[in-house]
Length: 411
Image (spheres, rainbow, N blue to C red):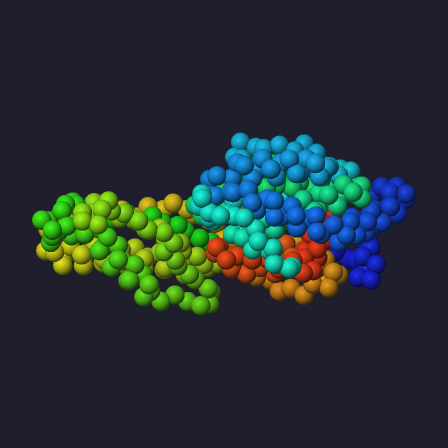
């Protein structure tokens, strides 16, 4: 694969020598036509972004959105559109030859639980709704790429596969991307690009994450009659306070978060159980291991403190269970896929720096497939919050970059 050597003024791809002279002459024109189509139809792309966002896709509940995305992908002109055993939606744009095969993937799920209001509010150029950027924008970009290729009749060298994946958020643990690469498309994928969220970033470092569920158990009882027994909720509170005081490095960036907790049965009953879920992240394995050890020690100390407070009366215990393990990795910035993404971005006037993050691209890194993640254009705020928004000014540039990158990587 060559780097993307494209004349910025004309957006002309420098094509390889394969194929007839007539074919070589037509390809740049068709790609330009596809880019023109994307720019001219951004309002339709945004409408699709809204419609997809208003179909709920909570963790492990992506089926309805997957069905809608499958329908739209088929109507956009993709071939062999289907859902695999994991629930991913897959469509193909066959090339002149089978290889290379490039996958553009965008995850279907959101972090928000079932019952979340996902109706989109429009305020001028801004769209507001949970998940509107992460990752309804990614899905909309994939559809724009499909429609652009189809409308212009672009003939690519290799095959482009578009995939809507399940299980990227929360405790999904990249189950969709993993299944896609190790089962559905096993042995077929040469390059992988995750289109995730808004903006114009290029992510070549995959941040590793570990997720734990810590469950505290106790004997329970009446809040008045049995006062003095060790309390699982109190132990959880002690653990949370100790974890909150842990010191972590800023370089490499290392983070922790207690994202969910629960337990108990009534305000006047001593709980028999309390639980919390913890997210740990770092691009450095040693730092992640040190944080992991610190959290486990905090949990053990919290249990000891709670039991000592009540003199072992109805002792509390804790179970530490790993519920998620996301592989970290890195695609070298000198690699062809990164250099091509940088060149395509520069050609379109997009100034970018390389970042680190946690996306479906991590799954490709784990199986040694050259991979990156890119933003889908526009500007997003409030990601993973109910106040999430997407500013669509100039957002067609994100779809244009995705299409141009896919075409170039398929050579």
